[in-house]
Amino acid sequence: MASLNEPTGDSGPFRILIVGLGPAGLALALALLWHPHSTRPLHLTLVDAHPSPILPSSPPVGAGFALSPNGLRALSQLSPKLVQDVLARAQRVSSISQHDARAGGFTIAQNDVPPKSFGFCTAALERQELVRALLDALAEKGGEVHVGWGTKFAGAREVDGKKIRVVLKSAEGTEEGKEEEVEVDLLVGADGVRSRVREFVLGGGPGAVGSDCPPLFSGYECIYGVSGPIDGLGDEHTGSAHWIVDPSGVGGYGTWDLPDCKQFWYTISASPHPRGTTSAPRFDGASLDETLERCKTLWHPFPGGFKALVDATDPARITKAPLLARVYEKLSNENGTAVLIGDAAHPVTPFLGQGANTSLEDAIVLANALFPPPPSPPRGLEWYTAQRSNDTPLNDFIGKMHVGETTLWRFARWSSSKLMSFVPKSKLSLEREPENVSAGPFAFIHAFKVDLGA
Image 1 (cartoon, helix red, strand yellow):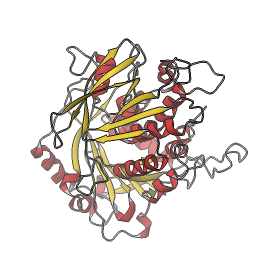
Image 2 (cartoon, rainbow, N blue to C red):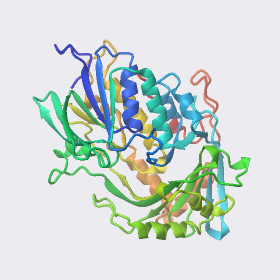
Image 3 (tube, helix red, strand yellow):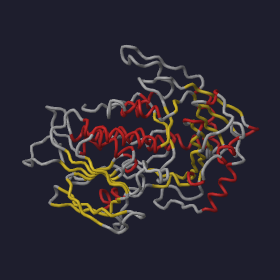
Image 4 (cartoon, rainbow, N blue to C red):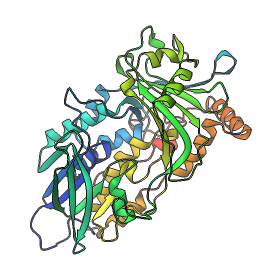
């Protein structure tokens, strides 16, 4: 596939099926609908195996994350009021502190987060709140859009190298077993780290024998949750984020402040399971309970320590999982009729905090690949793949330093923490960034810019 604006002799709408109604898939739908160079009618179908998050009976899906300035900049181009709506559901981050739980617990460094960096703040929120904001923006935009919850991708086959027939199946808890086939011009896999669409795009089909497309185990395991309101938190903790070195010196844990004194909390530790394999460890209830008991003994600057966070969390909102990552050189199939975005395209560990942010950027870049600005030549999905550089190697470096698996990495962690506190907030030229206050030490990430229509 080259571009949707090329003459094809087909006057009908271009049919796109997006599998995955998370941030990546919803952002792509908005990017396509708002794209300034779109000249061909679109028919969008979005499906997800989970039930709709807007139903009162639906359990929360996912935990929380931080949207940094580059992610909010991408959101600002998807709907006029979207950033305002997202920030109303989020907590602006004002500081990130690094601590050490050894010797009774002490602070290594506290870094203020600029109120604006490259025009936008940093904000923490629950995943489900971002999904709801994107769904609201999609409903407000309107258009030929069909949304199907409780529907999973079950397989696909190419038709004459130009179209794809996709098998959709009702997910468990709905009309289980009911199948239907739909024919589309483009299949988009936005279905997360364990993407089923990726198996079709890269491995020859779901469950294909010998397919080498699953993500790799990073060597780290994580437990995370979203607490209820924490009593006794003073104003000094509003907007605070914390990373704490584990008492053992290896691994660590942290928190992000959310609205209403809730906290997104997590722990990360090195695993004895072999890293770099497609066979990741699995955890049962006993393993989770054992980890939670240890969590309750951990130091935290909040009143009541880490135990207060665990005790204030609904067990249904606590998850223990392996951290997966992988670099994929291909993000689309040979005929350009199927493509991957978000975690399906580049699963990464969370050490740079860019998983959700890069997913939003993916959406804009893919839309630009499909709708190049005139009189630019056709771009196609290979152009999209080339644009989406993968930060997995950098994540691996940061991960080893954060976890501190060896004496050398622990020294690097301590040194970087101390040096970070002395890094001045770099002032940028007002002519270059009129809305910028200061860039801060993470400017190399936050400065990244993608523009819808570029």
